[in-house]
Image (cartoon, rainbow, N blue to C red; front, side, top):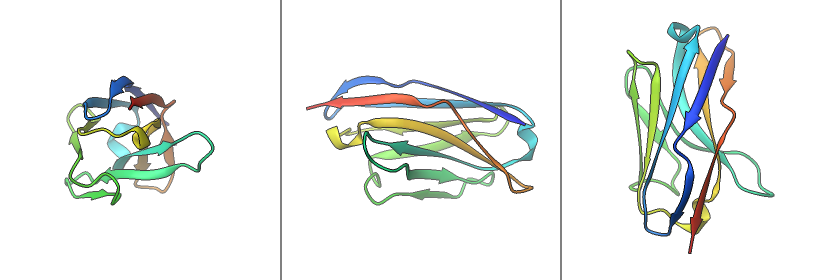
Length: 116
């Protein structure tokens, strides 16, 4: 089992920045890829970005150049630096952790609201 606790969401004006954090506990040494997903009201959950244990990253086209994911393996924590935020970035952001044996886990979500 893995527990994920997110923090750092909030309300920001368009063009501003926020930094999300996600700390893993439990069977954290089994974690391979970690990532962030988001779900806006009335929409399906979508991938934002992922990062492997080795540091390889993947970003949705909509956030490339604005968001940066990073990871501290020693702390089992992943970060999402979000710059140049837009109103369309408003969503609940969820942390995800994939384990090497196939299962994945989700955090409780943190609300990000970008006002225009």
